Image 1 (cartoon, rainbow, N blue to C red):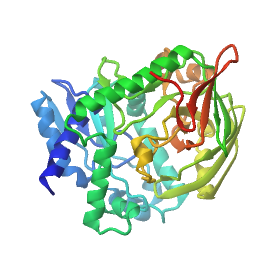
Image 2 (image 1 turned 90 degrees about the vertical axis):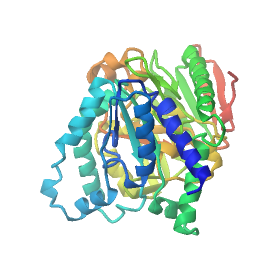
Image 3 (image 1 turned 120 degrees about the vertical axis):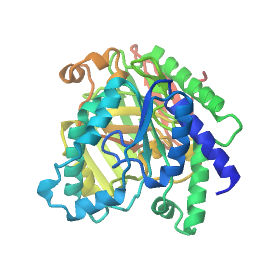
Length: 421
């Protein structure tokens, strides 16, 4: 690779440590999976991981360690392992994640998707395996959701992903193009990306402050194909960009990030919504999806591609039939401008307004992290084993906020912010 690429990789590592994790002296850093989304850090990331490790030690790390993973091994296991042994999971990996989370150290998730890898594996088998992984990792995932530690998720290219996005290019050119896009959407392509990120996070924070003061009781999403009303619980909290861990460390969970988000009232969502971008889960693609809600619950779900898989997801538990997140993203975001479906939620969710079925973030409700699951449900939050983002934004979408006095105030017009900060 060129010296320019190496320079950008160094800057990427700086942003990961200083913005993503806000890494502190004497912390430990675990690089690998945070839950069920991957088997561990991909081999394609080894060069970047070495750079991150060196910089972390220079910043005063006590220990940096890696849980390595190979998605091909996941495929081989699902393809050939006896189903009665799928519950068998490596306890040492689960314990390592929980230990780091409980201690309030730092974790880095590195995703390198292979969109078509599991396309010939039965849907039911994938969901069963995911269920076992989520259930086993639930204690660590709960600490992650409650911001007990600083954590961040990033992406690195691989040949299969690049080929899926750029089938007309050679392997080398595809990887190079994907790296360049990642650098662009992660704001690496300037002289001082760390300062750029501080400014970007500050802007997102100001938008959160504006909406938190407003405390709208309802959001209305309207476009040519969507008419959706989402009520918000009392004392809901908008978050976005950098957030604070329980130890007061400001970290940025996703790189890139363009969203501000909160939790809906699980019982008060109604209307029709068109999912505007395809989404993929473990090789299963869902396209041209339409959901209809009544009293918070999905009552009909259709899709031109992947409808059977979608229905399987909705049957995982009661929580997957209801919303756990609503997020706002301007249509002019760098990810939207890339004009690609990345088939990786960490990136795709930052291209458009989106909703998520499943688990809600307790931190988006005042005092929420201190509530038991039953109390969280009573306050309007949603509990589930899954959290699945679906993009609903478009260039013709308007979003209005409804005040307690039933006044209608514009939040977004034609996919862009309607208020200044």
